[in-house]
Image 1 (cartoon, one colour):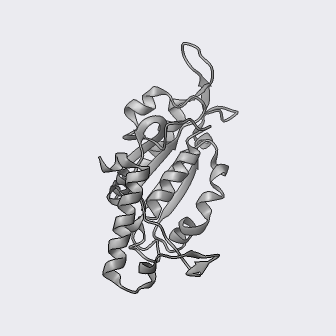
Image 2: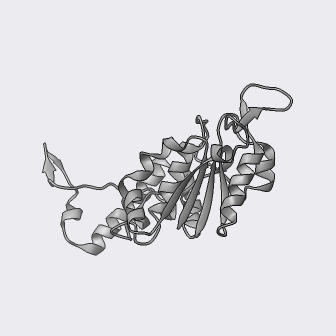
Image 3: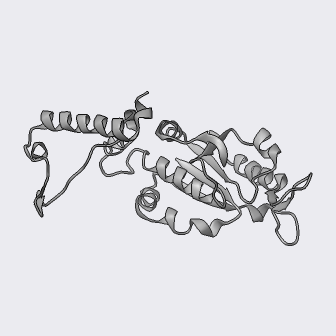
Length: 224
């Protein structure tokens, strides 16, 4: 999988996407992650990529031309499955969408900033619009990190145990069951006996029961 991220603040990505699972996935050659500075495509002396909105109003807007030039440059080198714009009014992101995107080969993530992007970007250049929740961030960079991380961990070979992702919360519309580790007893707090019984069938039944119970208590909407 290749993910190209377009941003006017590339330095924000230096930490989160260069550590842990994401870093290992790139070291293994399973994922290619490239950050593109939108200012490199500005055609003015001061490398401005934003301007005032027509009609007035507070805040600046990312301009159409540098975004178009950047996307065109990337598309001249390879075919992309989706151009995804991170925006608060996009489709709310969930595990089902993550699963779908993880099957793609090449993705572009466009980070909004300020008051967003020129509407013509959304009408002519973007294929999907995604929101990670009903709240507003300073820009789409954090949202792009969330989306990239959620996709990369689903790429075959990234996780040491490939079945791990299948037991995550929201797979099959259920929250994950409780988990425990050593010691089996601490301060009188005990691990459920079934988990130390070694009885595989009973353990799976317990996990399924707990996942369903937790979902009913915390996210009954998932069961609807």
